[in-house]
Length: 182
Image 1 (cartoon, rainbow, N blue to C red):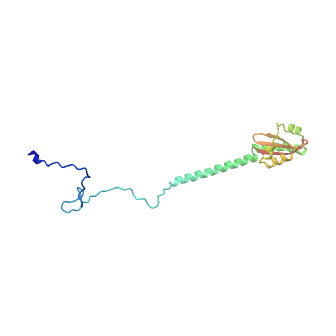
Image 2 (spheres, rainbow, N blue to C red; image 1 turned 180 degrees about the vertical axis):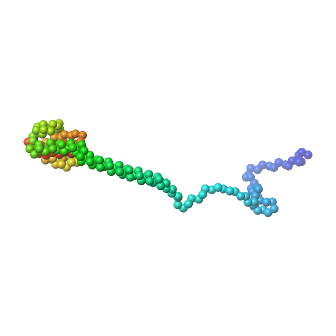
Image 3 (tube, one colour; image 1 turned 45 degrees about the vertical axis):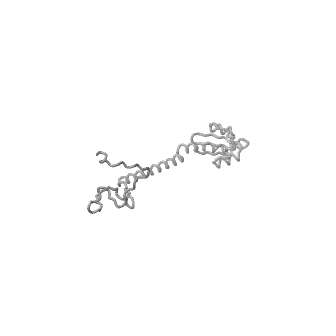
């Protein structure tokens, strides 16, 4: 009896598996047995809010604006003070004082057309005989270029604040000078 209760084994085919039956099918748990309509389930999905047409711009509180304006005003005052001090420094500070003293010493020597030796002795400074004519002719100081082109001999002295250029003719007499800041 055991052989009769069991169905006969089916021969295995090497072809594709059978196709599922055609027609409307209902997923398990969705259709009723009697009415054939799917059951509706409520699913709640939390989505982020939709962006508005224009982004919201949040300005800092009024106290921040007041601090920024006060800082800008303080910066403007500081810059003005620095510019004013620099102008004063160049008009009446140490560089200007040194230039005025040097000019007062050179002016009488120029009027008398003193010799090189007299100029060096009267000023008490160490001068360099500046023979680099090419550099002098390309200088950004127009007065220096003109003096170098006109006179054959140039003496140069410098300090931290002032440059002194003395121009001598072919006889070795002072004919012009030029003082400028470093």
